[in-house]
Length: 111
Image (cartoon, rainbow, N blue to C red; front, top):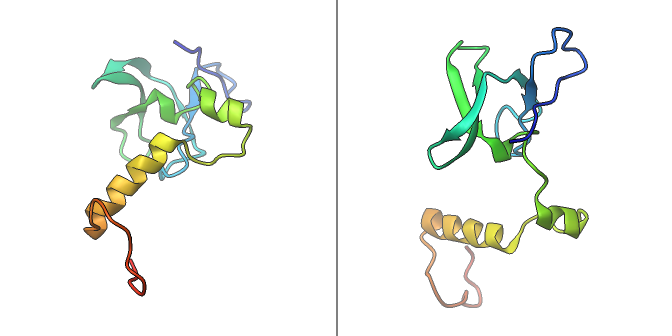
């Protein structure tokens, strides 16, 4: 378990984390950490949503508490997506756009 960091403006010393997932609507925002535990098959962080006061959770991997991705460390910022990420993106786009599973695009066709 990674130790939570504290933000510079946090004078009471409570543990905090920042959402780092680039596509999450709260990315870049810092929240006090209520707890960190294994739930729903992965390590998660729990925090109070300031707008609703409800307890929410996120995968630890989407936060500043996650260990750096070894691929991204080795790639040194030269690769945006891992091969597995690209495969998931292609699968998602095929489902959303109903693209054929195999075969290429015929000349003149636009997807």
